[in-house]
Amino acid sequence: MTTKKGISLALLVAGVAALWLVPRMGASDSLLNLLILMFIYTMLATSWNILGGYTGQVNLGHAAFFGLGTLVTRMLYTAGHPLPLALLVAGVVPAAFSMLIGVPAFRLRLRGDYFTIGTLALSQILYITIGNVLPKITYLPIADIQNYQLGPRYSIILALALFTVGVSYALVKSRLGLGMVAVRENEDAAESLGVNAFAHKLLALAVSAFLGGLAGGAYAYYQTSYYFNYTFSPPWSLEPVNMAFIGGVGTIHGPIIGAVFFVLLKEWLVMKVGEYHLIIFGTLFLLVVLFLPGGLVEAWERVRRALTRRPAGKVVPVPSAEGSGLPANSLTSEGEEVPMG
Image (cartoon, rainbow, N blue to C red; front, side, top):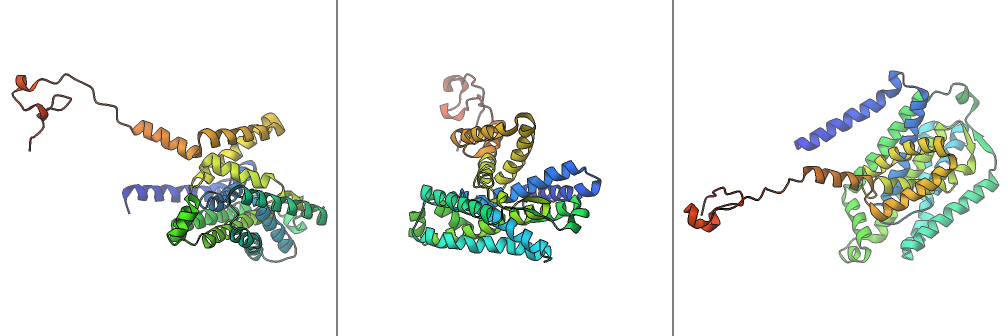
């Protein structure tokens, strides 16, 4: 392991340990709520990034997977089933559902705008359907509300967020991840080199749906009450796209940075301008796509390169070969002698 990797690993472990200790250090409920939202949004953005960022299939219907995760978890958990089982099913159901749309879509080779519009239409269908079938508010069990504590929920959702990022990292660094990136860059060229584009896109969709459903399960366990169809609404599809692009689409840490930035800015804007924050985020998204497509990750790389770039050497007069008694090509621009071969 190189020194740089060792330092990065040590910083990562220290950061995770610090986050784990937050509720044990007497942190306020407002801080825990803020961090929990960051974790859930990190899960959402990271899960979207697997399909949209690494495979190049832009999904505007991610709310379908998130909403199914919340629906399954809330129903199983309120029925008395253990939370681990509810969270597992919250990932499996959206993954299975994604195959119903992924197989025909990818078999028909739907790409670009056609796939994007199809996913958006699907999420809207579910949003309207759930609103008609289940128009009521869902609550946690009475016993849970009476004994509600943020600390245990914080720890569980942190663990789920770490799991989501870990799965994304392992997948992207594997041969499957390389195949996904190849499909994103040029699907026809990737297939000519032996990459099964259909299988890679289907795998990316399934993993993205599973992790998106897991994020929904975390939200259902965290929230005491909400309308069933709320988690299928358009913001849950559009906000992951915003976060991924603002942070840095197609990177591991981009969605994490984007989620933290998004939550902090959203909380501040909601207090200052209310619903007008949607206009600001829409404008910010357009600016990032047009002028900074790599997001904050690209911005940081530009700053880092600018800071580490060596200044050009000072130009000084070079004495002539006749006056120096040396061959003309033996002097540098600084007038220093260099050895001749």
